[in-house]
Amino acid sequence: MNGEEWAAVLVWKRDGDRVRLFWAAEGGPETADPGFDPHLAPDPTPLWNILDWTPEGRPVGWYPKLNYGD
Amino acid sequence: MSEAATLPPEDALKPARDMAEASRVRWPGESEVYRKARTALLAEEIALRRRIQRLAAQRRALPPGPVAGDYRFLDEQGEEIGLVDLFGRHDTLFSYAWMYGPERERPCPMCTSFVGSLDIPAPDSSKGWRSRSSAVHLSRASSPSPASAAGETSNSIRRSATTSPATIESS
Image 1 (cartoon, one colour):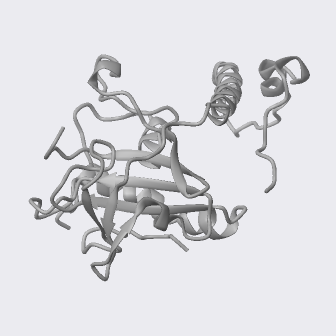
Image 2 (cartoon, rainbow over the protein chains, first blue to last red; image 1 turned 180 degrees about the vertical axis):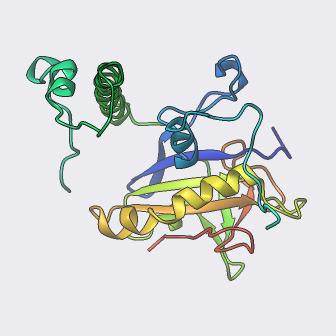
């Protein structure tokens, strides 16, 4: 893993002077369903839940961008 | 500390189907077919909502996790601090390591989208809601992320980036 960079959601709990992991998002590619990237349930990003409310759903292969050039 | 809201046992709950059928929402011009399908969907939405709460209770019941490694971070002043220093006055710390390491000119777009969804609720969880949870966004400086490294790891905390509303709530 050294030198690699991954997004990580981690929740920690103070335990006196120490810190313990409470929970962290787990589940890499081995947990992905066909047609989807691996993702948490419930989905933490409102974006995906909002897309799920639309008739079009989540566009296949679409990802957010930093800019949309408008 | 107040108790977490917890769903009563299944047999103490009204069946989701009954709840859905009790809904009085009707849209002008809707067909019977639409209403039937929508009510069935509402029942499933209620069932999912309950499942989410059961899952959250299961998460809260996890045994104590491992003691964290001695992760080291650089704060905005360049001072080295430890994980425990990020808690501020709280006992719980939510951390998000986003992909904005030094070799990146721009942050990861997905991470940025996620950070945006954390930004607005952050004051609610760190200041409003029971005032017991701090949140920080971490990014890698020149060593691995907290999830993958221990000891001498050096991470930096970015309060903001030009492309995202990242914040640190550690007080």
